[in-house]
Length: 213
Image (cartoon, rainbow, N blue to C red):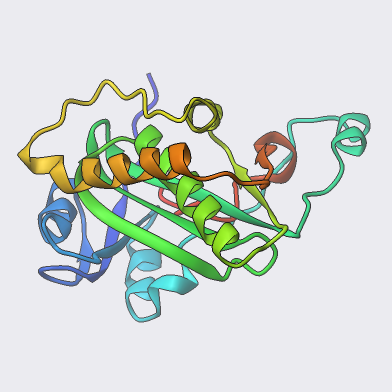
């Protein structure tokens, strides 16, 4: 059995900031801290260097990606439509600390971000991110499409429901209030925005990815 690679965690904004060597130490700094900013790295040196910089220079930053598809398959899929926004969520645990965001697909400029929430799931975050994106594009009368890498979230949005198995409690009440608002928005609004599955195997991680894998 392969040994799990050690991670190091940079916290730019939290109860305490700096580099932490365990997830539990990192989690203690971001739990119940509104707007916490953090990311994992594969080495202490990389985490230390990142701590000297800006959080937004590191989230969503791609490493090299080797396509799993043949040249013929890639040709059929083509390139992403850059007249779009991309959304994604990140959850440390299931349930766990969760946040979601949306970015311009081409420039990666962040358009919105919500969280972290103390107890959520990745599917809930992906669902909320799509609805947030729909509302934003409708508000600005935009013809852009939305990319997401979650088939589950696309299904929930189409059904105008959040089919999560997570139980509602005092710890995640604020999150579920957002879920209620999202469902209400879907049921009371119409939109022409096309929601498209991001082709991860062809294009690499979605631009809105938090880069914490």
